[in-house]
Amino acid sequence: MEPVKGADIKATCKEATFSAAGLDQWATQDFSILADEAYDWLASMFNRNEEGAPWPEPTLHAKGTYLL
Image 1 (cartoon, rainbow, N blue to C red):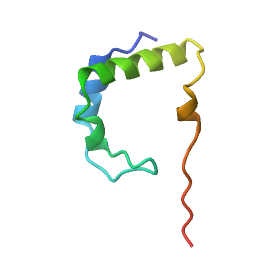
Image 2: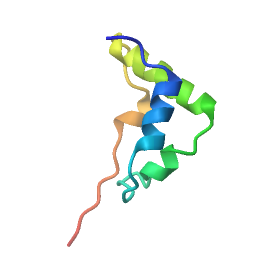
Image 3: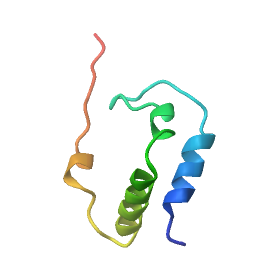
Image 4: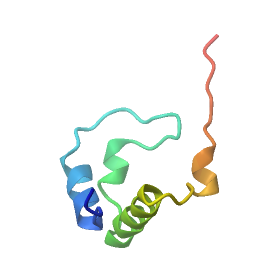
């Protein structure tokens, strides 16, 4: 797999259709307005993960919601 570039992630985020936010409260439109440095950071993280590096600690936890 070719390493992903920040510009690739940015293009994908800009092309995504708008949808409701997830449990983390991030919506697709939130990802479309990040700074170029943020896309580069995401690309770097994804590339390291593909090479076998562990995910950053904050990404290992999810918020759960229960509907009663």
